Length: 125
Image 1: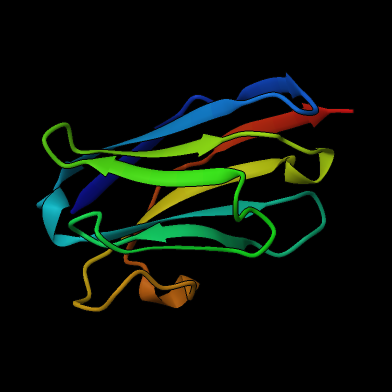
Image 2: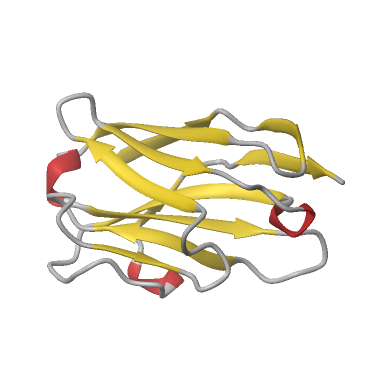
């Protein structure tokens, strides 16, 4: 069993920055690829970024490339998402997720085994 708890969400003006954190407990964090997803009002949940268990491989949705950075600190069992140059379109609930498969970070929701409860990010224009 894995527990994931997101934090760091809030309200920010367009052009601003936020850093989300996801604290993991339970099953060995270092054996999981991790991902960030988001769901905007009235839309399907979508992939934002993923990172391998070592942090050596990352992937991003085209909409956030160059603005968002995913990272992890395995010593602290924590996943991060640094979000810069935020846009109104980034407004959503952001979820972290853990994938205990053996592959690289994936954009497929069904590959992830555990999910956090989400944290709200609101970008005011």
